[in-house]
Amino acid sequence: CWSPLNAFAMRTAPDGTCDGCLAPLGSSFLFTSAVLLTSPAICACLMRWPLVGSPTTFATYAKLSPRDHALGWLGGAIWAVGTVSNLLSGSKLGLALSYAIGQAAPMVASLWGLVYYREFAGASYRTAALVASMFVLYLAAIALTACSK
Image 1 (cartoon, helix red, strand yellow):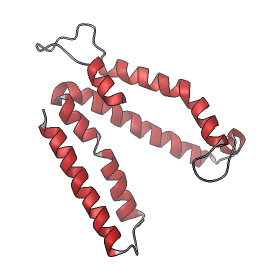
Image 2: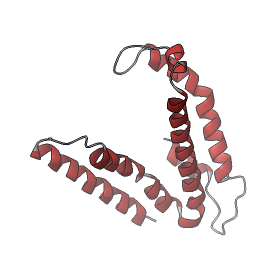
Image 3: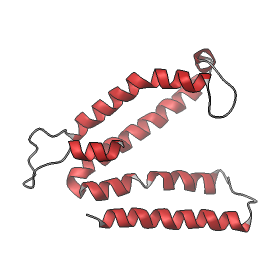
């Protein structure tokens, strides 16, 4: 839901002027502010009623090692840099191509799981075929989105 709304807010006139539109860094600021405001409530709900596993608390979270917290902050920083880069590239590449590049991120995550973590080691031939099909179809969808410019 965020990407289409963001593209609508950042639209410019045909001559490239931006009369009342939202700039990429402004969009990032508003999105980050919304995440900071809503995360405590969402995290509290998910800790109390987890989708998987047993309930936990913020106290348990606070007991994690500094390394664990640093890795979380690093992941968030990498995500933020990627999002801002994606937003900034939209004005240069066009929103369709920029969106397509941004949507390739799950492919990178899938490759990490497949190659580095060996999540499908020992899986059946059918599972391997389904994973391969997922990659082909996802890449095709990204390519079609990029060509829609």
